[in-house]
Length: 249
Image (cartoon, rainbow, N blue to C red; front, side):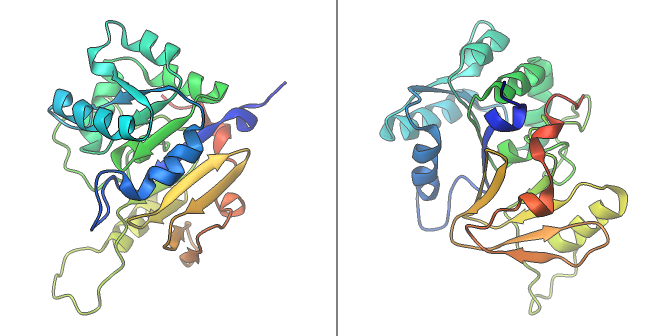
């Protein structure tokens, strides 16, 4: 019998659009390789206000890659749509709005169950953060209030997408992203992956692989941050992510 870690397949993208390219252009190769022979993707557009426009953008892009796409916001039964889905893609936007809508639609547990069964999950930006135990490493404004900060828990670590390194020449006196992550670790145990633009994490077969052309920075409580090169397996540093599936909320 397969364990959850045997079947779980998760692709976490730092950003949907990379400077100098179009929507998901930089991630197309990884998405195609990840989805394989999937015919249709269920899109969850909850992170943006205009769900129709967002779904139209995503549909056009996935059709160019050879995949059909339906949006959960037009489904008569959101839970059934997830149950029937071949794969799920959650796009970026405001993480608080996204998580609240996932609670309101009552699909969190259904997504967890399907991912544990092996359904491919793709997240980008906010969609990557909600795959983590909580949304505590988001930089978004809390424009709405979800019932809880607890998210899907598909992986045991946190992601800080769009990670920017401190600029020693900057005159801006506000907190850097690194300082905010350090503050998170003062209160929380989960390690954090500072995922730079253009970077992707692929979680499959008990392996957590960094994809893309740039390094990632790993933050752990009480330890000096470590740079990880593309192609590296982050499993040893981040622990077994599948062990958290279904344990949150």
